[in-house]
Amino acid sequence: MLSYYFEDNIPLFGCSLCGKCDGFIESTSLIHIKNRGCCWYFPKYTLMDLKNILSIGRVDFIHELKENEKTVISNYHLEVKGYFDEEGYNNYGVKTIEDFDTKLFFRLCPFSTEKGCSIDFKLRPHPCNLYLCRKVIDYCGDEYRMFSKERRDYYSYMNYFNELLKRELIDKKIDLIKDFDKTIEFISKYEVPKFEPRKLNSLSFARRAG
Image 1 (cartoon, one colour):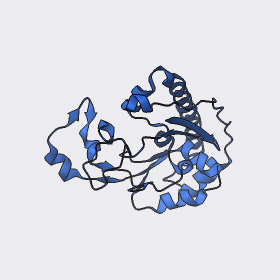
Image 2 (cartoon, helix red, strand yellow):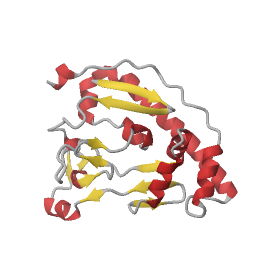
Image 3 (cartoon, one colour):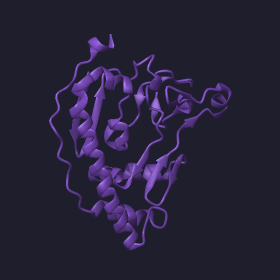
């Protein structure tokens, strides 16, 4: 089943096959955690992702990211590096399968565990919450159309206001490298209109998956 949940300006696509998708190319894991699913993404927090987290009162989590030794701080985003078995990838030999980069078979999100994601969905970057593998999209068929529109509209919303925030920071000559705390304070006070979500009914694809 595919469901849609939206709270505190943060969306979530819920997939009942998450962690149970053996045989899907995106879920192929050649590392120590085999039920990793598609959690090979290294989380990248844009200015708007940080804004959403600040809006729910979790500035403490942002400072945890800052102090995390795996976090790379750039001018206008934070990226948390995960695990990559480079030796295993180099020995694997095959670089692409069905246009899919096999490097992802050897990657693991830093927040991923054998029990799933270790952080609440409101603390994830938005791509984590809205990603669906190609197989699940196929199972949904034409009914996925409205989910696709919602995903596209939310991405557009985030990208648009992220760019506005970035321009404001450039004008003020501050960023996450020059003055992290001042930048976070500015983002916290910056006014952004809330996204207006659609009401989407859950989709059942069990018969297709079977």
